[in-house]
Amino acid sequence: MYYGTYLGLDKVLDAQHPVSFQPGNEPAHDEMLFIIIHQAYELWFKQILFELDYITGVFSKEKINDNSEDMNLVRHRLHRIIHILQLLNKQVEVLDTMTPLDFLEFRNLLTPSSGFQSKQFRLIEARLGLELDNRHHKDYYKRTNEGGFTKNDYQHITETEEQPHLLTLVNNWLERIPFFREDFWQGYVSKTANGKHHPFWNDYRAVYAAGLTEREKNKIHEFDWVFFEDNAVGFTEEQLASLKTSFSPTALRSALFIMLYRDFPLFQTSYQVLDALIEIDHLMSNWRHKHLIMVRRMIGMRVGTGNTSGAGYLEGALNKHYVYRDLSGLSTYLIERKKLPALPDTLIRNLGFQL
Image (cartoon, rainbow, N blue to C red; front, side, top):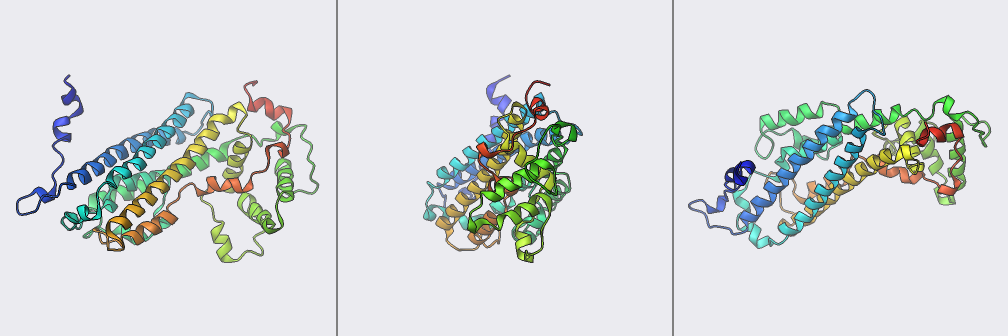
């Protein structure tokens, strides 16, 4: 096997065809850079989707052993996606070496094509858990006319959106975590009288409430709503909408418990998985922000080549297209490690390797 044959370099290196180089046009030097940057993005997007295939496959299983090889590979491959996204963020700096005047030399030749039409990027967002109803200007994503998707690409994206995505699968996994089984809590003595929930959460709520400042007192009502859907009285519809979560209260309690007791061996992999999902969300947002800044620099507030509102659309997507905001928001409800309720010995044995 020859190196170039194995990598298909004849096809890869012959896949750059600058429109400005065609007869009748004035060749624009930086169009080659523009094409190669975007082709490199698409290759890395393909790798991200390949990793997500494995990750969603593991989380689709009916039972998952958190200390299994599968989960360790999930953690490893999520971290690989993180490194790829870090690289893609750095890649924007290479594209930034092109000046606005350089871009204008060939920009009008690109219409109506647009980065908006990247099917693979939409598939990544959908696979991670970004649903159509939560997209900024969701009508943009239904277009199959000029500036939108081809019918085949639109159908592929739609079919992917109809399948269980990673957020749903992670939610189901968190809901199945068994560490609030009654037999694990034998010997636990609650310090809170007349609590409505599991003794641990009654105690935790009391410690959390005691640590709030005067200006934060309302957070205890948010705590009750987010984790138990209690005490909705007094919230406006707008406030309740802002507290709406993509994860169930049961899943969020499990995620918070993992974050609180992540130093126990059994939770180390689970915590790293959750932390990786948060980091992926942040890096996707960071990439959108870099893209927004670059577009403003290149075209100001002009309309995008794909007939979107250009920078205006990107700014809206930046603010709305978070997927794992609920997980990163759990830091709102953390307490100091030294104030954590002491766990019973029966549970500690199951959180370590002394099973």
